[in-house]
Length: 349
Ligand code: R7I
Ligand code: MG
Ligand code: MG
Image 1: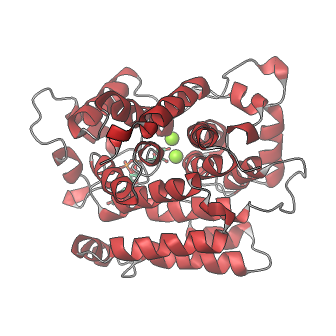
Image 2 (image 1 turned 90 degrees about the vertical axis):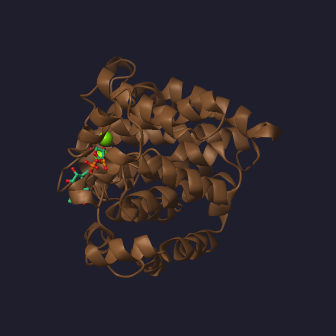
């Protein structure tokens, strides 16, 4: 039976934390043999290792700030969210933040900062960051807002607190949209799922700022749409190698090289795959496959984990995996509370 809505909410945030914690092992690795991935995953089943041994990184730390802010303010409040990012960074600066975003987080800590979007706009010579830091924390927007337009609007604004380049915030909106659709069961029809993403991104990228950024970075006119078309082509092939996925979609720290990749991982792993254990369910396959791509593995697995968790639900996630990762209980609690908020009629705008 298809999972219920609450199970999907919990699966989304827990799946995101698992991807971050489990994927951290291979972040930045160029070549990750599948054997090593499976070894890493089977070690999670070892009861003698102790609970919460795999620590979460900036991906989860910032996702928690987003969820906490939306829950406390019962709306998107940019000042509150910015303050939480800065406070969290100050408390635990060693969680593996991107090299550039650290400057933004330090500026956001200034008590009398007038415009909380300004520090992000000063990044990278004024163009802003195109990193995937906005996308990695975007899932809670899909759990907090019902309408697609609100999910879009607020996930973009939330990303703009650190990423003012359109590639950065549009990547966040794409990730939030993928979680939004997955929560509604849209992955039951994978072709329609990807077509919906493409048509929504066509509208989003048909925008002056998006076109200027794409031009300045020497990209095609509709960068996300063209990557999503490549996702579609790869899905249509009989067999796809890891090398092809990396060269067609990327596995890097830029949102453009990781959000469509994460979406591909989820779609590709809807079915059993050669080389992955038969006993694996879809969420386990998705995370294992994301790790095998190498590169920005914690973030790609975190984003793929959120989309897949929203599809398969919390009961698809092995207990041993949940016990191995720091912050799972907290993420589960945030998901339950976001579900309660989602069910409140007054939260509809
Ligand atoms: O995007 P961001 O928060 O980093 C997230 C990543 C995830 O993988 C996390 O797991 C963590 O490891 O970091 O942080 P940013 O510093 O804004 O962007 C990440 C990196 O992308 C930067 O440090 C740059 O190397 C690169 N980058 C750019 N390089 C040149 N020009 C981002 N934007 C630009 C740019 O405009
Ligand atoms: Mg990280
Ligand atoms: Mg990362």
